[in-house]
Length: 164
Image (tube, rainbow, N blue to C red; front, side, top):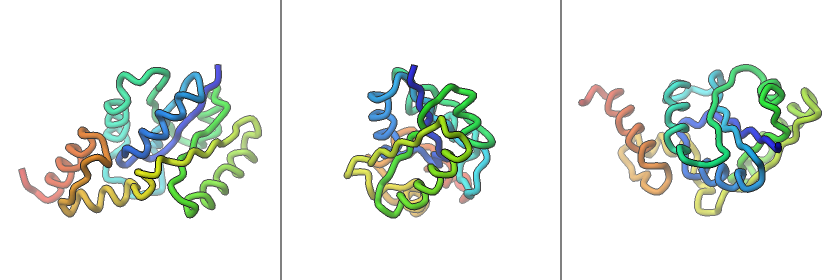
C-alpha cells in the first residue's frame, strides 16, 4: 500500500491545501494529513482546533486520514508506513525552503521521498497568513477557504476583539 503524508500547520486550512489533498489522493492509496502540534509559528488556532477543522473539511474524502503529530516528520512517516511526504508549492519562492527540508528529511530517513505538487493557479496567491490578515480586517475570503473555516475565523477574531 502506497501511503503519503501531507504535513502542515494548516492555520487555517485553505482551498489551496484541499486542492493538493484532492490531487494527492489520486496518486496514493492513502493520504495522511498530519497536523503539526508543535511548530515554530505563532498560530491563531491551537492544535486541537486545527485538527478539528481539517477533519471537518475532509469528512467524506476517501482514502484520507487526518492525524496530528509531534517530533520529527520522518519518524512519524516511519511509524505510519509512509513512503512519501507531499508538499505543496505556490511559487518559486516556496521551493528553496521546501527543497532544504526535503534534503534534511532524506538525510534523516533515506526511505522517505518528498513529492512537490504545484497548487492550482487560482490558489497560487493564497497563504494561511494572508487569509488570516484579510479575515481579521473584515475582508472577503469567500472561495479561498471552506465555509466552516471562514466561520471559524470570524468567530476567532470576534472573540479576540471582545465582541459577541
